[in-house]
Amino acid sequence: MIIQFVRHMETDMNRLGIIQGSSDGLLGEIGQAQSRLFVEEKDLSDIDVVYCSNLSRAKFLAGLIKDKIHKELIIDERLNEIHVGQWEGKTWKEVTVEYKDFLEGWFKDNTNIPAPDGESYAELAIRLHAFIEDIKKLDYKKVMVIAHGAVIKTLICSMLDIDLKNRSKFVIDNGSITEFIFSKNKVVVSKINSK
Image 1 (cartoon, rainbow, N blue to C red):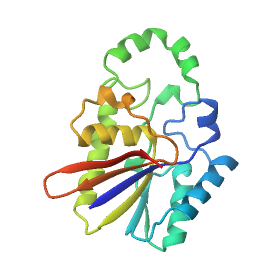
Image 2 (image 1 turned 90 degrees about the vertical axis):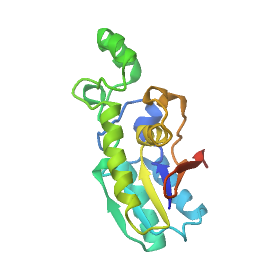
Image 3 (image 1 turned 30 degrees about the vertical axis):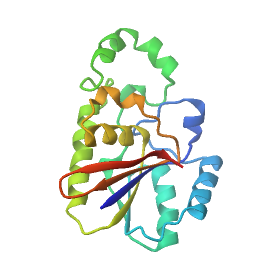
Image 4 (image 1 turned 90 degrees about the horizontal axis):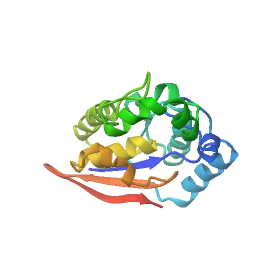
């Protein structure tokens, strides 16, 4: 089975450097145009089913793909972006000032320590693992999943047994494809951040 993860297109908040996390927000004109172009340019004819997170920025692209290929679209909240609690809606610069003392400990173990009122990357990995295990039980050849940057980075690490603290070493651009190939007892990452 092949599972392709596509990061949603650029939001206005992405462009402005604002942390979105699990906050919902619509794509702006640029992201909508990028989504339409993606669907026009990609050969999606071999996709059996489309999954996406419950967030509007992912659902927009997923809906366009569904309309093009006339296959089922399944919304799964386990694919939502990591919930970063009190940091959502702030820039990283604001977080580094407002949470300076907290960040000292967080940087030492940000795999297990969540942002205030948020979830940890370890918790994110658990819900993503459950999603992958459920999909592997189904009879699909190729699945497309529209999701988020931290989701995809966390999956790369957990599928390849890479320590989650190394997730920031991966770049996952808006609109990029990361592809996993699952066979009986192994997984191969065949594409990362591919356009």
